[in-house]
Length: 65
Image (cartoon, rainbow, N blue to C red; front, side, top):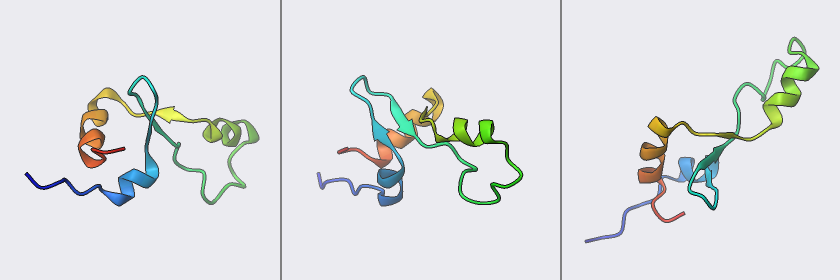
């Protein structure tokens, strides 16, 4: 069987933890930040984890990471 190509967009967006969870960044932090509160922007900096439903799909996109 040939090797599976890695989805490069997914590889740049997601990382695995040692326990196998998928880390991701939160959305809505790129522009139009003046109307968002400081508290909201601070919370958007924190890392989040992909849901179990999406994790299976993401693992197929980045098989060798």
